[in-house]
Amino acid sequence: MPDNDQERKFKDLLARILKSPLYKEKLSKNNLNGVGLEHIQTLPLTTKEDLRNAGAFAHLAVEMKEVAQYHESTGTTGEPSSSWFTQEDLRTGGRQLKECGVRLTADDLVLIRFPYAMSLPAFLMQQAAWQTGAGVVPASGRTVVTPYPRVLQLMERLSVTVAVGLPREFELLAETARLIGSTPSNNFPALRAICVAGELMSDKRKEHIEKLWSVPVFNMYGSTETANIATMCEYGEMHIVEQDFYVEVLQEDGAGPTAHGERGFAAITTLSHQGSPLLRYFNDDIISVEHSECACGRTGGKLEHYGRRKDRVRIGDTVLDAVDLQEAIYSLSPTPDAWKAIEQENGLHFLLDSHDYGKWSEEAVRYHLSGKLRVPVTIEIVADSRLLDRAELVKNVPSIKPVYIQKFS
Image (tube, helix red, strand yellow):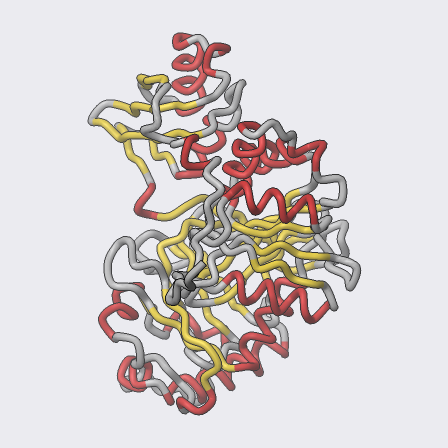
């Protein structure tokens, strides 16, 4: 049930959100007088398509002089969707990440491997670090300035205590370490934790990364449009930051809620966001929410994330979400360094790459995956660079500034 603080913030949101052209039009036929959270399902959903069609400015709800930063999604599946952040929004986002079970302190040095270009998590983690007094090493991903070997050198030389980034980055950093003769579980004694966001992370994937690095891994769930919705505590539960978000779990058509604790589709209302607030944002993520009374002391909603609608696979009567594929893949021994699942008419075809592939039996791997997923499976063990170019991983050639003036020597 919504608490009084959520109700107050929701009513304030309904007043503020009408300052954006998108919602002024979207809610023009709704009488908002007396509308509370118990009536939220009478209000329209906001879809990704709504945001893309609206353009960058249509859901901006503050004057431009109040904007501190602009962000947008990668746009890999179409037009990117935009989000605007005030200084207050950035501070709020930092507070949201401080809820994570890693418990940052002023003694921490945090290496941030999230990309610093357009995406949001790097900036929110930087805020969280600053708010706790921790130092930051901005080792941005997806840039030639900090290739993988250099990041490993920074982690070791600077005695980094917490590293944050996409889950995939820590798999690739571990493989790079192996290639250059280092061992992640031994060569970084100062490292005490890893925090990840931006990709799905199943329980088995979490266990895999923890085994690679010999430190606990904490997951965070959010998006560029919403900021961070839930953080993982020290007991492995993903707690919704309910002072900032109201989360619904809806049927696939958005018509109504699912049964308590069942998988459904997320609809996120941002109670605190000022720059570009969202009402019932139907983001195509598949989640479940249950009430939790956790050993960490938190009560309220705990969230499970299963993947996105676009990655859901239907083969016959079997429905598989991305989390189901991850759980099967990451339970293989050895665990693949890279993999890809290809949907076919009557089953799934897997490409699998491991530096230890000689330990696999093709028949045993096929049997394992088909048993876990309950669909016909074929596999191909890849020994070339189609899935993972290891030569590129170990290149330690950062970009350099051009020489504009060459002196006579």
